[in-house]
Image (cartoon, rainbow, N blue to C red):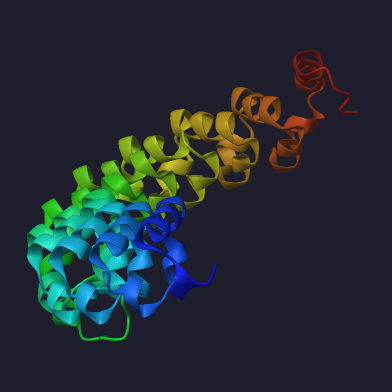
Length: 288
């Protein structure tokens, strides 16, 4: 049956099954609020196919962004300026912040709602809030990148959002601990002082031992830190201090995780027959 031969009831059945079916319908149905409401309720992004008038209808757009925040992209300019609509969108999907008006991208409550759902949304703040390098979306203004509440909300959702934070936030232990607790790789973006903080580094290497690479020289020589790292990822022995590469317990822990770690052990230790016997017995492998 052709689109222009559909009854409203038939159109409703189609969009209730798949909202994108609105795309193939006549302009009459794309302007039919009942049909469009059903379509966006099933698939928010079907708003793209609605009439211009319905893209400016607050009830329709709220239904669409409630189903998929990204539908904000298709809303009228006026509704991208509407705080209620934008909050509904970013609460459903934080990345919808990219489609909000400049004014609302600069609104702290809106930004908090967005980064609370998706930490990566921190990079979508308005040009008005960016630093001098206006073309680099990942760099936000001093006002928000140094705002502890905003940055904490972001890194709790996505630890790597720490890369977008201000310098003071990278020195803030609570912020950095939250970031590495969510994603160990955020250690890369911590301040030098916190890369030398044992609690922070332990939180990171317990997730992925290879992050020992980012630790300070002192912590690469810290037995507890290195044991945690090589126990999770044996090859992290490569980053350990020379003294710990010659430490029997450390090397054994690394080799228990992977035989490949032997290549990073101290050469004199590998000449110790008793130590090699320990490895062969514990790992049940032939080293010699």
